[in-house]
Length: 233
Image (cartoon, rainbow, N blue to C red; front, side):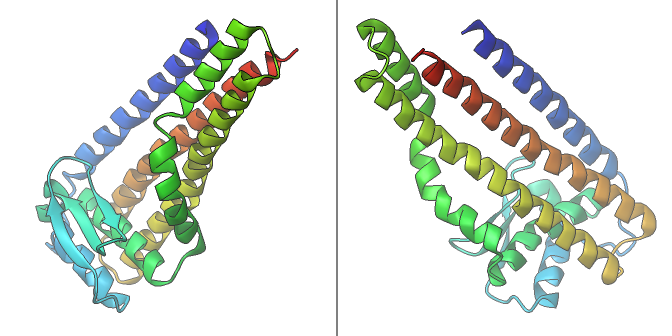
């Protein structure tokens, strides 16, 4: 278990460092005001209009970095700062979230796949580690490597596998949304060269948070898989 705690601690540390760097970048680029004077909400609405999307609403949501696209009710949810502010960071986030709306409208395959996994992951992700641990504990208590405890642990690994798969499918979804955002910002001349550089850097750090999460999920899955299958020897 000590190895597991060290692993989780290392992943948590890296995640914290990346998250802090992301916040620092957004704070920095929040000082780079847009020459066109448009707010995040206006940027988002224009990107939707330019892609012929008329059934998606741009709304404000409480919190910081709580921005997201909701495919169920077709809303681009922008945090209060992004919704109202007129800077490179707000433009980057607003365009990125609209990138997801464009993906949805165009039936982007990775987004479709990710959406199908949401119901499964929402049920299994919270209990997977406990199921694996319970199975291993039962194996140890009964002294039977291939008994019911083993199959319980494997079931937990399968649950964990879905969450890991979800994390990795999220990567192309997020990177593609950022790519769409940056291409649109540049092609439509929405930002200056300096503003574009800030938007690009901010989105790169945002993507890295998903990368760290995916690596962490895979590392955790491999660790528990070794515990389960190693326990049979």
